[in-house]
Length: 82
Image (cartoon, rainbow, N blue to C red; front, side, top):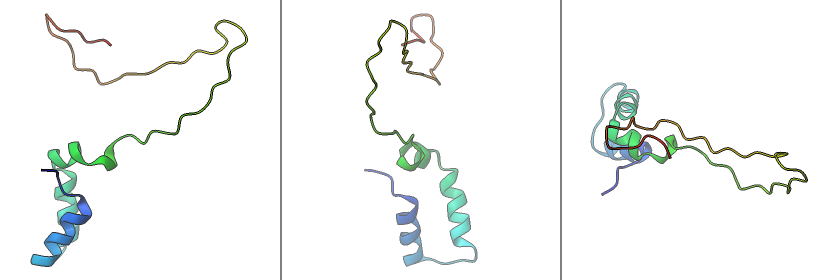
């Protein structure tokens, strides 16, 4: 089962409960919820559209690099590179 979005959670709470500053407190709770942060797509990276790259005319004229960060350190029998 998936995790509800912040808006859906607020709608559900609003239909069953009320207290002063409930929206602010609920937002604070949601923003500290580890599961919500992992499953909420809003926090993911926004990738752009693929773009055409002109074919280089000379070797080493164009270099493309894919950055990989945040790797978990490897142990004795694991790797920490890709």
